[in-house]
Image (cartoon, rainbow, N blue to C red; front, side):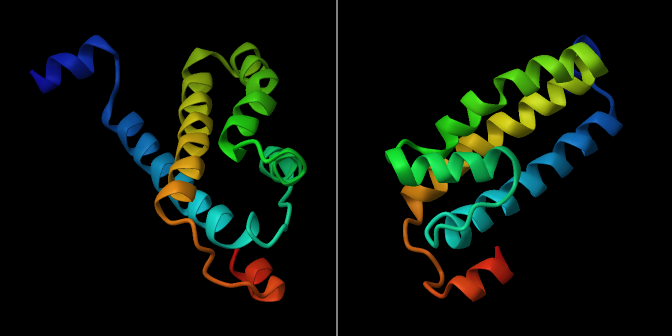
Length: 122
């Protein structure tokens, strides 16, 4: 059953390892953003930094903002690198957006209020 499913979607072991690595990296990033950077108003670079700034101005969820900011990047990724790479990009970005908002609900308290420590740990 499992082998048939993997063959049907043309997913190999290498792909599964790639997705596991993406999941681990995204989980660590979501924790760093929610526990250190966002509560201390530290904007990292890229889409997450822009989403953090907009969040502090509008109080919209960071995960939702990241999805909206990343839509053009999804399209460019698929067009430039192909559907296979684009699927991994969509998986990673969608998962990060979901986990950021989920961690903010489940564990709402930051681990430190010190901006220096937050910037070092985050």
